[in-house]
Image 1: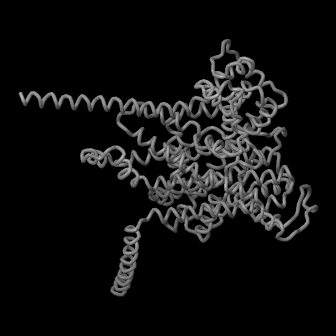
Image 2 (image 1 turned 90 degrees about the horizontal axis):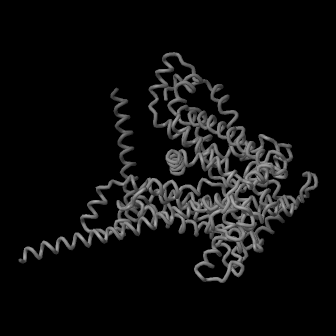
Image 3 (image 1 turned 180 degrees about the vertical axis):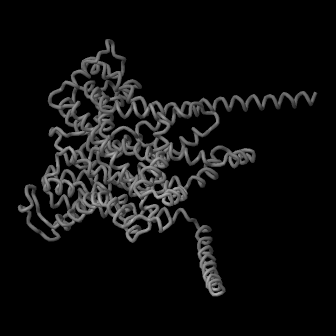
Length: 295
Length: 331
């Protein structure tokens, strides 16, 4: 009898344990889902609201569109005052060129700093490190003054200067750390076989460094595509070279009351990054974390 | 690396020339220029219009209430973001790391997403969310019956008393997922055996988080705090879009103040002086926080241990040298 009692007790305990676990797992999952949904909801809300007309949105901000249409997108793309298509081209050009230059320079400088002994190695390292520590926003005003005095503002290449410069230090340190981890036997073998420095650099080291260079490129794509401050200071928003964030600001001034249209414009500017992100989210998250922690 | 296969200085020089020149031109030239221009009274136009005025700009800066308010607001953002972002992120990591949670990858992807969006777009999104008539917040308050109709709702971005809290919420929200992923990568590197044996010993989830996970991810948390401090000292985009520093100067931050002074009031000399101020203040805060964290990192016992380590290191080196000398003589 007593034995039976004990048995049921044990069973009860495991049952209550199970229920407790069940409740806990529901609570934990719900907390996380609330968090995740707040992160993603603005995007969803913007998307379906952009398919509404202004009147419909103003009457009911949260409801689904009754007859969804793409009129807002057409209006945004054909707007004469703010040329969003041109801004998209500008953003793509600036981002691609800046990231390419950052990757090349970071690779070369990172390799030289990691492997070659010369007098200026240490000082150069310190200089680049300082570049990482200097608060870039204190350079806004003087950069504007210098660029306008030299007549270098408002050109297609203007933004490449700050973007490449401020992207370089972090990237360089990532590359340098990576190269330090590769044994130098390969380079020695190449040198013994008579390979020149340039050839060793580009046909032996470069392929090995591919993973870290991809990481660098990912980090820099997001940074440069979203950059706003230097674009604001160095470019005229209606000068023809404006990037997307700048054009967005110009556009919002005109259409500050037409929210569905503003949302359509925002979604167009965000689309490349959003698609890129959701397609490669795993690699992107990994790369960004590596960049943040090691950089 | 072998010195025999080292390239000629000429080659190294050629490779480094462009990046280093670019770097010097975009970082050090403006830095020196800011210092130079900060001693002038310059209301825009060509530089020949500028008149030197000694340290008048610096005197003004020291007494400039708006600048110091902006500095205070930057500090507010730093503290709010450290508590909000890293605190919430840590709690979420503990939740997501539980065995009971499904679809971890989805949460990671969704949570990280806001940090990849431009601050300009997010500024606009939150301007709409805070909007009196068409905003989500007033809509929600209306639905749960706190306010009667969205027209009677609060104009959130006009609330001078709470504006800093209101503008820091989007900032906090944007980066929670970012820090969550960073901390998560550190936590998942912890040996699960430690946690399991603690569980067997009867440690509750909160005890495990406090006494096992927290000390083990301390260094990662400090990296997060560093990122947080550096990031918030240059807050600009969100606030520029949402409030332009207003109402009045209630949500002014340093970078925005430098920008408005230089480009809206055309005071380039004083603007340069503010830039120097931003430079000094940011470096002081970042450097100070680093020192503080180093001090916190090494607690009492560690410090004693380090001292001992240094002593033994020195003794070892001495011995090694002696041995080497002896070896060289013998050889």
